[in-house]
Image (cartoon, rainbow, N blue to C red; front, side, top):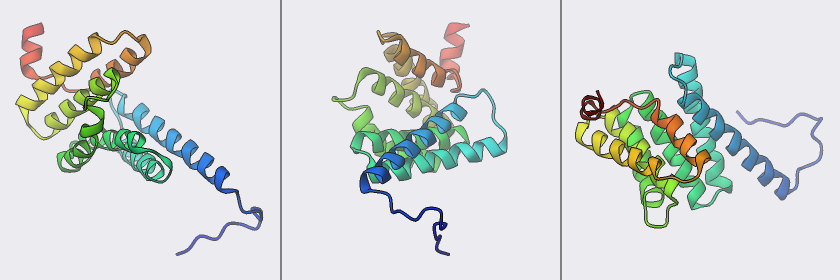
Length: 172
């Protein structure tokens, strides 16, 4: 089925307008998916909305984004799939984002988030060793962040991640 725009929209938007809207939609979808992922609990409908929003962000960033935008979108998909306990697609998207977001040129907050998401993916897949390793590295990198806003963003994600048993027992 092909969608035909209504007669109200008679003028074709300029390429710049299209890009501007696609960037706006990518950002809105990204923000909605992260917002839902940071909730302590979600309904089944919210889980579906979270995944749909993450896929929408990936779609739009694949059109108008650079490699970094696309890596962040893949990271969001890895995280959201891990949140709904689907380790196979979570691992697929994690593999796409880690070379950029955990690499040498990544910003400190990007590396911290990459380890947080990797911990979540490992937990969803039942890999306790990687879960613990990535979780501890995410905590270490987050604690070292000087920017309060960046630290708060990572902490919001860490709050909803399963805490590895070995970390829980050492803190108790």
